[in-house]
Amino acid sequence: MTAVRCLLSLLPRPYAFVLRRVARTFAVTTVVALALPAHAADTGSTWTLDRLMATLAQHKSGHATFTETKTLSIATQPVESSGELVFVAPDHLEKRTLSPKPEQLVVDGDMLTVERNNRKYTLALARYPELGAFIDSIRATLAGNRFALEQVYKVALAGRGDDWTLTLTPLDSRMLKVVSTITLEGTRDELRSVAIRQADGDHSLMRLQPVPAN
Image (cartoon, rainbow, N blue to C red; front, side, top):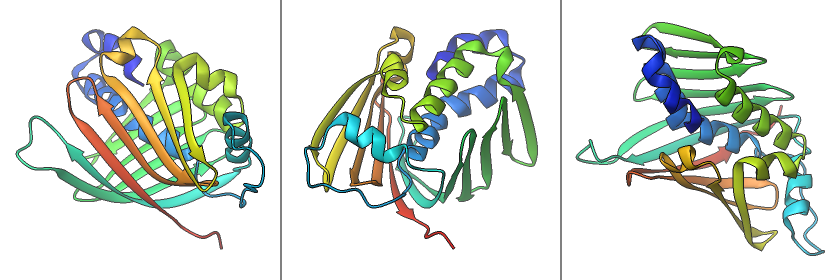
């Protein structure tokens, strides 16, 4: 994710642009994949981080629509977008922006593909170890590996099963220079929103609506 910023000055211009897009959007895509609806969780016992992780780890696939509002220092008013998110275990993640302009971000296996403005960029994650390590940590989290998540973030859980808030604070100083916090709010195994606050003051809020499985 944000660790790729240190690589940007070494990349050809088109690839630097692609990785900047990833740095701004990949956190939402991967973290959202953790909480696309699965089975209803029993909230009868104490709601803990281990319990939340175990609940989210049940996901084998998920599909949700989103509306996202970004507040940027370079924009005179908030920027609105909408689209859909798809996750298929173990390693396929997609963020498809449909409005105002089509854009698609896909991680499939060890390849990252971005489509925007009728151009497609494909990168092998093996060429960017820091980005690959971040993505691998998210994939491990999808499998219910709390340890992997805590290698990247300081994790704080508040609330109960029917109204919880998970706050992620990057541990890496380089990541903190870009992203200050990621805050997820949900009910049981359903994620309602993801808020990202950047170190420069920009911030975004994504609201989600699950798409029922056929």
